[in-house]
Structure formats: structure tokens, C-alpha cells
Length: 105
Image (tube, rainbow, N blue to C red):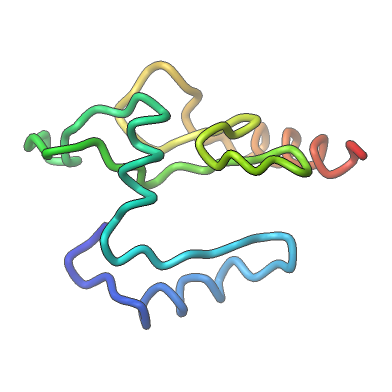
């Protein structure tokens, strides 16, 4: 979501979080970010507070149960945004919740 973001930068960032169970996407037109922003009821504002034409999901961490095909319905999610209707990212809680999902058949 930064001005310098491009496909190459996305590939480099994805390497930092390499795991065969993780999926990384580059969305130049921010279609997914817009769909998730609306689905997660995020505000249509930039981090600076400037209004945007639509909400965009960024700095969000989404976890899905096995077999889920509706990407707009995560099992749970956390964020690093200025919203109060979902938990702020907490590494210990995130790890525990994801490990629980991985143990579920």
C-alpha cells in the first residue's frame, strides 16, 4: 500500500514469510484489498486520515479454516490499523490461534 510497491517489491516481501502453507498475492489494482476492506468493515481512510474512495485492507492478518473458499470470510483476523471491531495484532495470540487451526482436521 506504499507508493513504491510493485510486483518486484511484493516478491521480495513474500520471501520473508515463506511457508508452503502461506499464499502471497500481488494486486496492482487493489481489487482484493478493496473487497476485503469492505468485507471487514474497514474505514475508507488512509493511515493519515485522508478519505479514500473505498476502504482498503492492508496491515491485516487473515486466517482461514481448511477448505474455506470465501476469502472474504476469514476464521479470524487481526490488524495494525485504527479500528476497534477486531483485535490488534498480538504475536502470541496469533500464533496460538493459527496453531489451533493447523491442528484441526
